[in-house]
Amino acid sequence: MNQSDFLKMVSPFKDKVFRLAKRLLISREEAEDATQELLFKLWKSKEKISDYNNIEAFAMTMTKNYCYDRLKSKQASNLTLVHTNYKEKETPLDKKVEDQDSVNLVHTLIESLPLQQKIIIQLRDIEQYDFDEICKMVAMKPVAVRVTLSRARKTIREALIKKHNYGVS
Image (tube, rainbow, N blue to C red):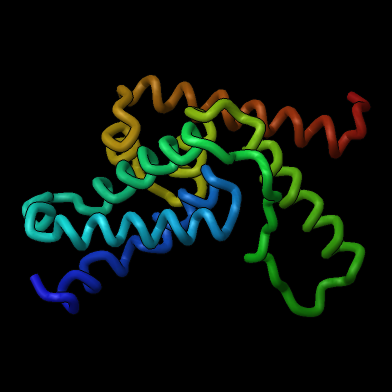
């Protein structure tokens, strides 16, 4: 497999690898390093991986495992999350601030979830993987994935309701 074929193979999912790494490692720089390292590992084993049916699921599993290893090894809590995807023209400033606060709150809530819930909500709700793919990536049964996702969503929903109602029921 030449470099061009390899790039065609990984291009469709390299951004997903980065987003999962960023979700787990928080830091953009750490996520960029992780993505580069994972793509390098894929390149080194390109002859072996050409046989895999679902290279994307394999790469996402590698990403998850690599990030776990990084988190276990040393640093994990020294950088802040910044949401940079939200840009809309001609929105009133107060609405922009309110929307940004909500986006930041959701990111903070996701970060506060237990690790398994955090990964599953990232894969399902942000990366849009189907349940079968998620089950393979996290090595869990479908029922366990659905329950974990449901609990994560419920935790976030309850916190958002509490915040937006200012604690008033």
